[in-house]
Image 1 (spheres, rainbow, N blue to C red):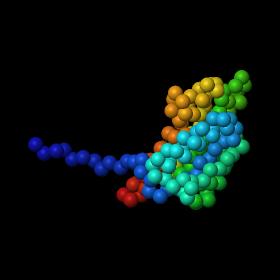
Image 2: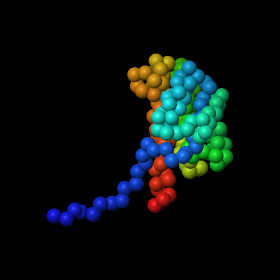
Image 3: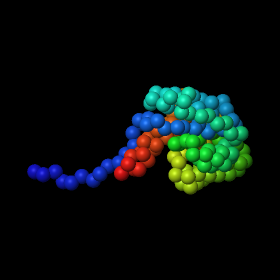
Image 4: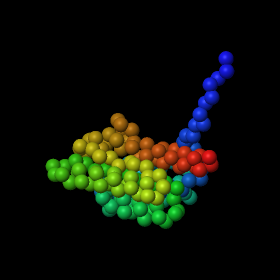
Length: 163
């Protein structure tokens, strides 16, 4: 019996093709963000990225500043992906809601406007314990997951461009 026709499938893989990555990290809550950074760098290294030659780490003062800095990095033309790492912890005021919302919208906007992958490694947690869990303990390391998303998206976009 003949096989039915199959569609063309384009997908990304966790394969480094010489991509250049910038890891944009919030200094606010650096107890957490430094762990996210370690996880992201380890993941890139394990997937063959020469982190000394093709990775740059940029420290921003806080999470709210990430979209503006990401926009400037995207416009530089020096990177194939931005890995944004931050931690916003809920407090007793609405501040959390404003910051978390604007950071996510701002980073998404930079990605869409620039065509550059923006991997979202921004933790939004209710408390410090949840943040610690997501920065390398029980819940894995969200920085590592963001690095994998960046690798795969760079590969995917290159596959799309090849046709």
